[in-house]
Image: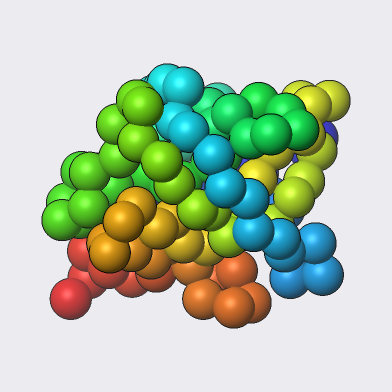
Length: 124
């Protein structure tokens, strides 16, 4: 993958991976919540490993500073429903999440085109 331009803490190439044509919804249990840096130079991001009936898949949520400022907290053993774009990241299947439902709570991350809600969020 080409190195993305760092744009307000979000790598442009990484952000463009979201494809509205590959959106699906998965249901499962959170195995772990991990903090990683997906592209060198980006701020750290929050990922979930979610075990479904078919697979255990990495779910990319968004930058840590945005996730930590939301009311919905996702933790290991939570049952979740994730809607997002299925992509291949580092040769493995992954989901770039648009929203995560946990019970009655919804963590909204992107619009239907995949545009991140955190873009411009700190400028308000």
